[in-house]
Length: 631
Image (cartoon, rainbow, N blue to C red):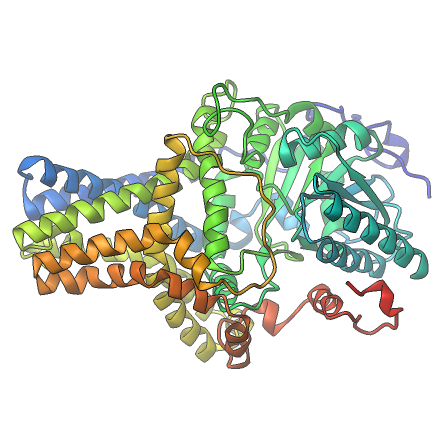
């Protein structure tokens, strides 16, 4: 089939002039160009007012503090409540935006619902999977599913090629990759026309980690493709989603990147199933808020997104930060920086909150999740230096700052709880530790009501949003299943939050004192955590829990023990929590009993069914040679 490249003279193929330049956005009209200032003020102003009101009520209820400890408690309380106010207002904002419907959506999102999921013949796309010492059998199994999905969509398969970009250093693992690549090529020859072409490349020089891997692809193969769909080793995307993204990029010459929302699915441990349920339930409103206020000033999340190759190659080269690691050197969390650089060059960066057809996997146990959080923490702390890069848009700097604050909030919470607990042990009054619930007077009552609202709104609004729609309720297995699962998830969250917060606080502290995380491959399979590993890797939680329990015993205050006892219990039992929730049999049992269900359980996409079948060594609906699937 003859392909007309968009970066060449496309006017003869039906693309209107002017011709799209390779490295800068065209001057043709964008999908939309309204001022987003008022949308951003509608989020910023209520957040600041709420934070100020909480601080004023705290002083009104308890007076000006005496001594350094009192001031520390008040200041820390004000800071953590300012952050919580920002989180809460995102959900309020998102719910209002949902109520406005299409009026709050971008034109490109509205178009995404109707754009054909077929190849136009006007562009070529590379779907690239960057891997580093991954389970090659699992990676190529997902590639088979995506290839079959593309084949079902029709066409001759020449519009999209699938690349595996390996950074694996271990020769034995690389040999498995090469073996799996040979097998998938044989499988493609066996299964007829319409499948994409598979390509494999292994780098010898691993400079730049994943970002360097993608950059090297752009240099070596970029001239062959207009667009690039970036996938992680655990990503899955339907063929229809890939082609719709390519068509949207063809129609929007000023767009340099479109980010989709990929939801975690496909894992069976109890921990993974709870998290998959929680993300499906609580993420949509916050993501709707994000898309509404950011407009074309979006961010890049590193995978399950489509990029304009020439724009990315010419404008998204990462700087090397001054100084040594961990705060200097190569940028770890590179994706958000690459998106900011694209935006700096004038390219639109868009988000599609509800496109569907894209998934990923998540760590299947608490230990592996904490390991990922340590890497992400160091990467986000590096962004303290990235925010000063010249020419970045204000929204791009804010994306970076929010990531930084999300981690800095954790040591602030730990310091507040520690200082307020000591203050309560000394004075016999819970005070701000209990958010004013034990206070007297109107100011204390209003403070307690406002703080409880701020803390509870994200989950209550999300739950209410689902309950208001029969379709959304059905996606979670019905009202009874949803409510039971939400209650159990909240109990789990009470046990998980102290552990996550203490760990993240420690990660922030160790980053600033110079601890460098290693570039290791991620464990993505269901695995049960041994007791020895859980205890060894969560010793910080055990120490914090022991110190808090000792303080509670020393104080001898029953109200303080009742209020902070659950936190101490969560910290002291965190290894048991890790071991118990890492069991896949408990996860599958919860599914059989209608708990922690999402739409990926109640209305599974064909691609998810295919992937599950492939992992079992069989294929749904077609007879194939067994050796094409065996691991």
